[in-house]
Amino acid sequence: MDAIKVETLIKVQQLRDQFDNLEKHTQWGIDFVEKYTKFVKERSEIELNYARQIRNLSKKYQPKKKEEDENKYTWCRAFYSTLNELNDYAGQHEVIAENMTSHIIADLTRYAQEVKTERKSHFHDGRKAQQQVEASWKQLESCKRKFERDCKEADRAQQYFEKMDADINVTKADVEKARQQAQMRHQMASDSKNEYSSYLQKFNQEQNEHYYTIIPNIFQKIQAMEEKRIERMGESLKTFAEVDRQILPIIGKCLDGMTQVAESIEPKNDSSQVIESYKSGFEPPGDVEFEDYGQAMKRTVSETSLNNSRSDNKAERSSKGKSKTLWPFIKKNKGSNPEDFSHLPPEQRRKKLQAKIDDINKDIQKEMDQRDALTKMKEVYIKNPQMGDPNSVDPRLGEIANNIEKLQVEAQKFEGWLAEVEGRMPVKSDPPRRTSVLYETQNSTPPTTNNNNCAQDRESPDGSYTEEQSSEVQSKVQPETAESGDEFDDPDEEMLPTIGTCKALYPFEGHNEGTIAVTEGELLYVIEEDKGDGWTRVRRNEEEEGYVPTSYVEVFLDSNAKDS
Image 1 (cartoon, rainbow, N blue to C red):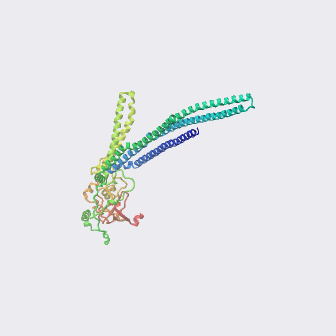
Image 2 (image 1 turned 45 degrees about the vertical axis):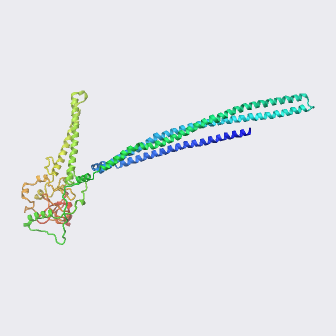
Image 3 (image 1 turned 135 degrees about the vertical axis):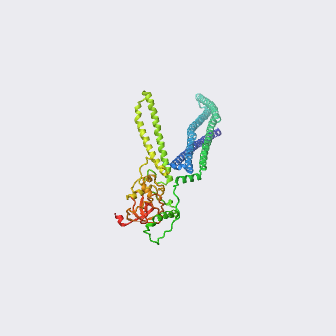
């Protein structure tokens, strides 16, 4: 009996240990699921942050409005297309984060709660069965101890009866009493034996059912739960890879798009665009003249050699050397640009004027479309007065008519400037221009200042002057002046006094009437300083004088001229 007791206790103890081990293992498995869920969540956050940073980067380098001209270059368009593809690329990383959240994180979080509940139920059933077996075992032990105790009492009662029966000094009544007591004790021992035997049989049945039915079923459920958990972990790991795999084709298309736009770059076309955008129409400068500072400046020349010297000097200056690579060192005019783009070289000015005219024509077309729509609306109102008052449209039609008229006047103004650039006669609506230098010289009046189309607008060292003589200026030259051939042929003209000297910084052809050709480094007299129109009047000798761009010369005024 003791051996059976020890064996049973060992089995119960082993079972308890197994339950403890299984409980620890299954809890560790659930903790691992939660740990993996946390890992996927952090990966999802990384993908979202990466996508956000990529989108912000793409947005940061998107072209601004002032950079829209860059789109005409293929390499710029390729870069901006790459930014768009990169934006789509970021969107795919957002898809990764969304799929991981919905297909893995949410699923595993829900499953972990289910596993916790199922695990709790299984181990509760196991503990309950274990407690029932332990309770039955305790009851069996109680029955066995009672049977043992009753047996011992029966033996003592039997021994007492036999002793009393052998003693001749004991009365029959005492012997009978001892006999009855012994019989009673034997009956009690027999009843305890039967009870113990019956309960032992019951316990063995319960123990067999516990070890061969209840506990194996619980273990099988725990095993199935654990295998399902492992299977779900495998599915989640597979989904983790598939989420990335699903977006690979789209990412591949994004990368293919980047490659295609990179291959579409056309260097020759871009360089042609640069040439077309920045060509000025000026002739390149020639060689640099030798500057001889050893000879004093010639102050006078013979009057009889005036005409020959002028023609010879012009021919000589056109063939002699000029400043080398003049335009890379051009100084740009500061301040606001004039409305007629006269600060630009001829070719660029023509493009700007043409673009401005196109924009104005588009605005005119919009206004005309609105006018047509309102006219149709008014006709509908006239035919169907219940729909609206026809007179209510008139104020808007009048406003549109004024806008169209203003825009047409604006277009005519720019078309006049465009005609001037292209060598055509300007339209009559062209605003009045500054009169020619020749006309002003013959009337002994200084040049007027501050006009958008002054002589400065025709030629300057920064490429803002053209060698075309303004048709407006030509139209205002006196007929007798044009026939005279030279503005300085009048011997009665009063000669202006010199107020300083100047040195030519750049060569100037001086094709326009009233100007004078100079070579780089040439020393001249200043007889009239710049009045604000960008021109300085200089004299080479007693008979040869004219205007040169102020920015072409370095002026040294006399002290008395400065004081005045």
